[in-house]
Length: 123
Image (tube, rainbow, N blue to C red; front, side, top):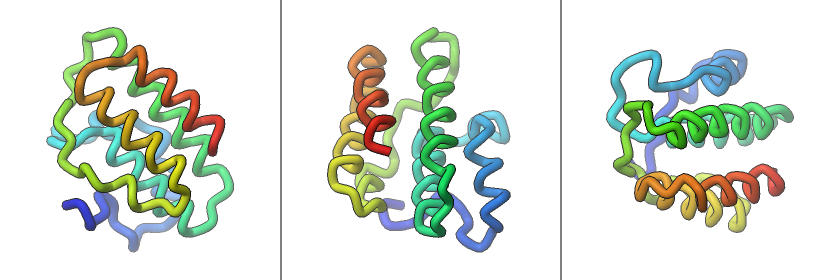
């Protein structure tokens, strides 16, 4: 799974933007981090040159983060794609994303929030 995208690269950009705007766990029961699905969509949109991809990505991840922080969401916490940070060419954002996912998997939402702010400032 590490090298494969969690999204279909054949779908139009408009559909991918819609995927960023909604919560991926609400479509069906998924066994991967919903944040990973958003990351893969973001990477594909960025590859296509979509200018608003970063804003949509950060907004969606913040919504998921808020749900995790409240503790009432039944979201997966197992990282099935530990090398997905390599999908992006910016090494700083890649490392921030990797650290964010580690915090999420360890259920440490406080440090993850700071990492998310750092990611937002880099995008």
